Length: 143
Length: 471
Image 1 (cartoon, each protein chain N blue to C red):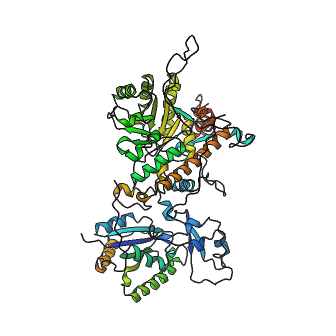
Image 2 (image 1 turned 180 degrees about the vertical axis):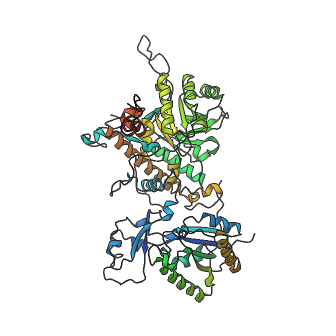
Image 3 (image 1 turned 135 degrees about the vertical axis):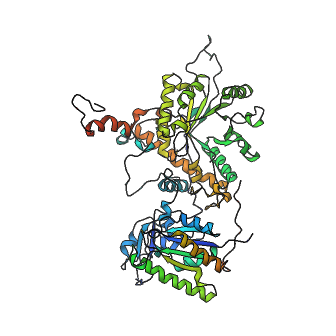
């Protein structure tokens, strides 16, 4: 069976407090998805993004607040710069920078989940599997 | 003087980083490169030890950070921030709260009583077990040499039928054969958790813990393999409704069996006792609206031990779905007292026993002891994400745990619980856990206080000639 691309969502809790419906929408779109809730997108370092791509994900999407709406004032802005740095690194090693992206969501506003899921699925399916990712045989749960 | 019961705990580190209540946001950009960076002077070396965990895809600093906030206060550019960790909030559920999970992990790792140096910031009462305040009157006059000193506090209980009186023959010898009893030094039986990513190693760890603690591991007969069967002395076999093979060779080696309640359970008990007279039988009764009457009926018919079980949120079944284990236990206990049967039968409770204090509170409500399962799984670092039930991958690889490691973690947890039970008993001035059973005078129930004391004070006055509730 063909392996489904895996998307890891790093969700700022202010931007998307409950990423579960998004995961369901992504899985319905034919992806494997995992969400890691973050206190603020500035918790995410450039090396975190790269490590996630190396060990688990085909695509990483950070859901962050707009730069001027960050609860910690400059957190979202810092994330933007770190992400850009990580994208440059990807480019340098010959991987598509689109594997790391950020989506800005206004805190407190309703999120158009089907649209977001469709966008993410479109990118992930177009890029396909990440050649730099470590492949591990998933264990079968013990009966 | 009997040998003192002591649980040997020793630190057993977690295999995976724990999920902290708060997390550090460390903004590297804009750093002044101070000569004395707060990260260098962290008293717990949290910044030096931190890494990135490939499994949880997160920073491991929360495992080492002790929330002293020295870095937050000390950074001249205010580049270190502490924030609530959303991963912590997502742990467990509304009953098995993140605080319970974290406290259980701490106890399993260290074997120590969880103590908060910053005091208790929570509410003083809540639903369920949190509505019971235990007596601490003796805490102002502690025993001469502490609870671990010469004045021994016994936590032993006996499982089995007890005669209400003794009969002696003319020569002063006991005129009847006393019923068999199983004595365990801890009022806790360990049960196989209902789910886990690795049932086989979990059962190995559980049986090892039961042996070390000298209690019993409650495991379904069909799950007992030859390796577990070698530990038969420390097993309590459970059988599904109506199915028990009295010729099973394992029955002659175990001390306690559990049969699920059904119409023909008494005949089944009789058949087992006829073939294995030295065996103690326990009947598992669901805590529904008819539980009190059923337990009384079983006790009158000669049942030796009863296991009253609730769901994992300490709620009853069917018509008693809204009732908490503590209330159901009190009803069952008082029914047995009224029927003059309480001292004949052993009553164990399970379902929703999540903390050490729940053991003492369940005993106050009328249980002789408790049976725990999920806390033992939590001791193995379970996140209670239930991914294993959905066929997903366990985030903490429970399927690959070393049973020796698991045993020590469970022994540590029970050691910490036992110490807390001793603290509760010591604070009450009790020297035996058996004396705590049904001792509601040693506790205050918030709902009773509200009804009897606060309602008359704060309820609206009724019309002329009416008395307010509680007056």
